[in-house]
Length: 358
Image 1 (cartoon, rainbow, N blue to C red):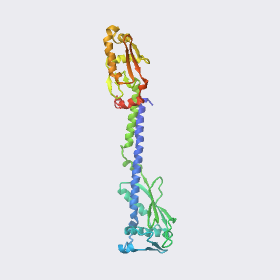
Image 2: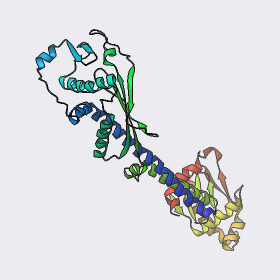
Image 3: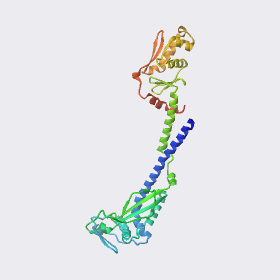
Image 4: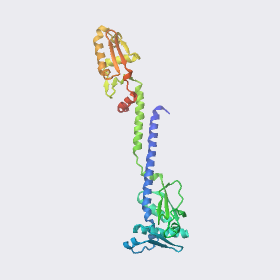
């Protein structure tokens, strides 16, 4: 692959990979919403089953009598279960919900016919998800304990009674499990769910510009900027704590200020660069090279050029000194002890904006 195509390909790859983060964030957000909905809706599914099956809900409520209760008695064809209010005496609304759920769970555990209908619960959860704008496949699982084994006698409770019955509404592979919900009296039942959201649904809810794209763009700008900076460094010299671009005729100070280099001073700087590493020039060579004159005729131009060079950047850089010798010439001295650390990165950050638009 040609070098000129490499960066565009890398840019496309970088942006594409950045959307992996967006996709996962969208999928995670949808699953969290579904999980919260499952926790909220599951509390009322026992009552919903009673209504859907046309099982009458009747009874009188007397708050004073309910508060005075010392025990609860649940009758079934197989057993009579007595529970002390020391273990279970919720608010009346919770009492009703748990009782309705227990009605179905007791039937499930004794005849194994799935009285707590997972197909109905599955549909109820699906409808709740659609209402929230989430299309997904759902699988509901139920585990039921024997209430008689949880409360073997009126004044005792077995907190680690085993699960006696398990049922799953459907098989679902690759789904995301949601938090388990305890239902019925004293956690008699365990209701759990697994949800699988189609990729197209995740994409519909996905943000197409987020922090991942910001990071991708910033990363791209850094790569482009560094590439251009390295290219610039090929014709950029660094003396002391100053950068000089001899091709563009510009000098950058440590504070990021850019100054244009006048013609005579630029010519002198190029001669000094060619004299590396000693950076010493004879006055005679300067006068004849720059102006075609001897030292006597070129003295005024020489003095003006050297003085201008000092004012241009040398006087502002403590690591530089431009020495003059009356009859010999000039010497640029670089004081190593005053050099600042990380000079390349410093100028990279200072010149980033300009470099990107060169």
